Image (cartoon, rainbow, N blue to C red):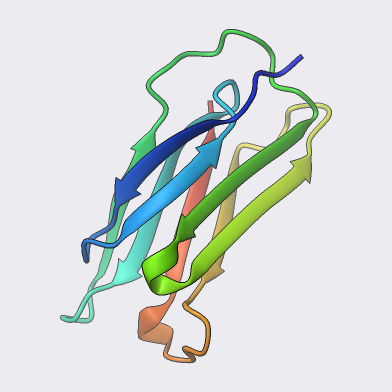
Length: 111
């Protein structure tokens, strides 16, 4: 049986703070990629799971990433009974923004 989710906080390249909920036996890290004012892309690790796997992850995996300041609240809820998913990539932006330069890419990697 999988353990309950843990909570963490991280900040991105522009100083926005994120609230993260993750399953400690599944998640290795979460990275955010965004375009900087210079036009270059930058990737930063939001959180790295400080623990190691104590139990096998359950078949359902839930990870949530939120940033109230940017009105971003993304929750990934998936079923992976055989444990074959290695990485999830989510591309999003703040509500109402159609500017591709404001897109955020979250990379969620498993242990």
